[in-house]
Each structure stands twice: as C-alpha cells, then as structure tokens.
Length: 131
Image 1 (cartoon, rainbow, N blue to C red):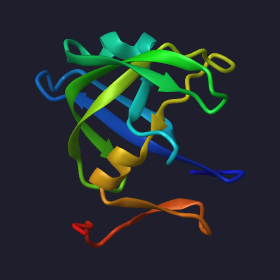
Image 2 (image 1 turned 30 degrees about the vertical axis):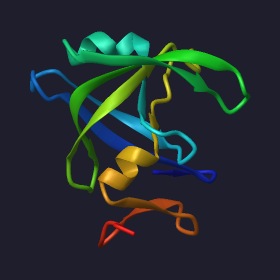
Image 3 (image 1 turned 90 degrees about the vertical axis):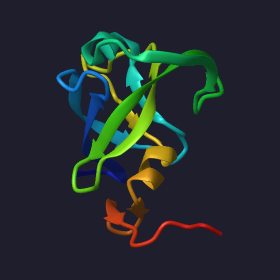
Image 4 (image 1 turned 135 degrees about the horizontal axis):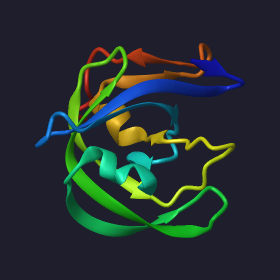
C-alpha cells in the first residue's frame, strides 16, 4: 500500500512454538528502526513468547522508552518468504484508536525485501550480501 511517501505493507507474525497464536496487521516500513516493533497491548495475542531481554529504544524525537525483545516468531511480509526472528514490544499510544507497528531493517533484510524509493514499494532482492 502506498500513502504519501509512506510504505505500508501487510505482515503476519506467528508464535513459532504455538502456531495458532498469530497477528496479521498492516505495518509501516521504517528503515530507521531495527526490528519488527509491535504495541505492548498486543503481546498476549502471540501467547507465551520467551523474553530475551529488555532494551532502551530511542525514538525519532530523541525520547527514550523501554522495549521487550521476545521470540521466536515466524514473520512473513506479504509477497515474501517467511523468516524466523524476534519482535520488540513497546508501549505505543494509538492514533485515532489504531496502533502503527513498524517493520525495521532486520526483518526486511531477512526477507530479502528492499525499499524502492521511486515506486514507494518493497521489491525482492535476488541475492543476500556476504561482503
């Protein structure tokens, strides 16, 4: 989906150890973010996930907040192959009742997805870099 320079795409996040626990949502592609970032309010929807660590996150406006890194999850960006990863849950404030999950550069690279800046879309990368 294209919206005024913003790339929004559908993604499915599934608890790898409890495959019936999943979230399907639209998320903002944010190459300034590292991970798949979800609202803390959705954490229970994925069931029991292992909490790997708590981390400090810096927002675009330089404010900081705490995030909880959890996994393992199976993450699939629509149109791309699924990958195994982890997610960060943060306390988000909904905008008009809606949360804005983020897809960061780690799941994008894992999925072999790149941002086409001219077409405002995700495109498939044929090869991964090892250099």
